[in-house]
Image 1 (cartoon, rainbow, N blue to C red):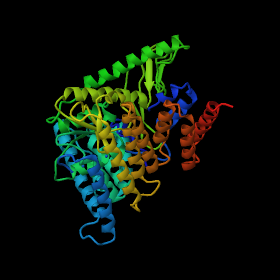
Image 2 (image 1 turned 30 degrees about the vertical axis):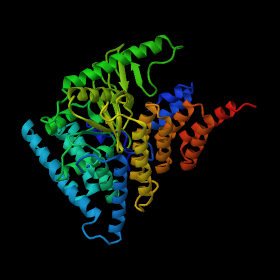
Image 3 (image 1 turned 180 degrees about the horizontal axis):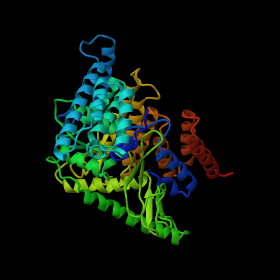
Length: 511
């Protein structure tokens, strides 16, 4: 199964597919590196992150509805309720989704005057039939064809719907059918009419896209923040939604990259010239000067380029760029998401009359100031219309408590399952927002619920420990790390965190 943290980069996916500051506040640089080692690469145990239309119910009511949905799935499995099984429903939707993306592919080919390669048609045949091994093999072939050969230009143009078909196939393969339906409908039912949904992780983007496209109800605009720096993805989004929302232009995307590189260069110069001062580069931000040949870490020649690379398991590793000698090269997820964060805010600025809800793959802290909670999601630019209050926070916690009970009552949801990893990650995101707004008690409860859902979730462990450390609760933080070690004894980062916090907690207790 796949980690759900970063793959949504479309160009990123051309080859398949943290909050760090808290520890540095306490001068524990080693722990910050541990944190980054966990959060930026993919973990062995993947972590994830998410339609029905109509007026949005209260969060607690949505949670109860989700619990009832899981209960009804148990009744169906027991044979007491007639009708198609969840597996049959999902299989039908897979065929419908494949037909939809095949149609979009052909329509894009007609508009942009390219030919659909025969291998694309065979790929969609395998998707529609649910032949998972075959569709993966065909996708790998398409990746190679996209890199070189006579079909490379066409595949670059048509990559958006192809990638989404693969993404949906992987989610269908990894998720129990009823849990997939419950999850997607929980997200879509949280959206108000006309709201734009921004999905970050593989499930958080893929499953709502899947149900949205195969539903007869309201069709929402769904985009991903993780691919906004990719010109081919912007072309795909413009094709789908060009008449519904103002689009980013390639020049705006390039400007965001240039602005980031210029800013990163200034911060690198500061850290180089003033090594005894606090560093301005963020932990995990890989920024360096090009060597004398003007070559960056990927052997690229002079000039700024965006290059998306493939991780060991096929997921996007990040962005790399190269410049002339004496200029800077940047790489890694921190850089990619900093650019995507700027671009998401640009989209929102260009669409002031639209409302946005997000499922995070990576914390976008510049959006937190006027954000609020919306079911399992965060509403961006909520402002005075639905502010984040103590009552809103309490309703959110009720949502997550009901959700946890629902997961615990479903025998299909094992301890090491995609639904647990996904829901836990989303609870952490809400905890981060609550902490940012100084609702520390509620944030602590959100982190605890996230850990009850998935005890080995590194994001939950580190953010919970960070919240405790910010309050000077060293012993509690050490206990939380020890609990994490018990949940995942093989996790060396948890072991290092627990050991360092134990020593620190012992030192604060005095003789």
